[in-house]
Amino acid sequence: MRILVRTSTWAIWARRFGSLALPLMVIPVLMHRARLIESPEFLVVEIVAATSALFAIVLSIGGMGRIWVTGDRGWGRALGGLLFGLISLFPLGYVVSGMVRNPAVLDVGTTSFEPPGLGYFSAVSDSRPQVLPGLGPHSYPVDAPQIFALAATVVDVEGWEVVSSSPPTDAVGTGQLNAVATTLLGWRDEVAIRVSGDGANTVVDVRSASLGRTHDLGDNARRIAAFLTALDEKVTLYQRDSATPAGTEAAPAPVPQAIIPPPTDAESPEDGAPEDSVPD
Image (cartoon, rainbow, N blue to C red; front, side, top):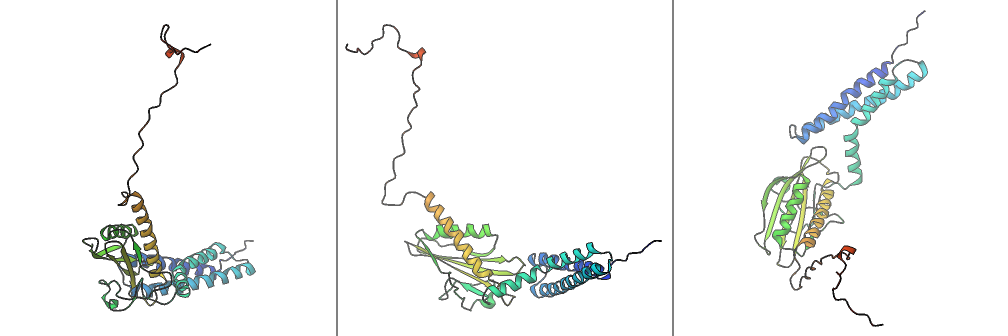
């Protein structure tokens, strides 16, 4: 007699919802980063993906409970639905975590008094950025054009899209660089970097602003802090590798000394060659 063992319906639907949620989570993120869809559409699709993921998790947990009691088949489908659902909740978890751990701001800078201007996001260009604890202008004893060049190098390494660049013409000039940075989930923020020199020192102010969302999740403050840290390292390396500062004399380079090997038996003085006499 053949005994039929059915597959849990809960497990089947858990796998289906999980298989739906995963592409709904991944594909919109890639499209949002590539600017193929705008932020409002991205949010709608991600809400649908999160809902599908929650259904998959609930159904998988319920399915595993029924399988344990009834002995039905479907452990693999239930576990697959649970795994897909948890992975698909990553964007929601990332957003919730950022909103809990960071203040609700959209415009952050190193100064709120005459901050660097924004050109790309004109909707917030007239607002004053918030200066969060630990952020402030950085001053370097290097000419403004050189600091601007180092800052542009950091921007290039970060992969930001430069939208405008006005380098300072001399050590007492002012220059500014504006760029667009793309976040992990595809939101775009504008970064404004101003370099001001007075002949002896150069001050760098940074501003980072978001548009199209109600919370920056701490991205702007982290971006400014990371940029200034990287710029500090670049300036330190530049000062180390640059010429000796004025007013000091460079130490003379050491004269290489020839290494003379000790004489061997073949190189001993020939017979009859004068040798130092040693008194008895």
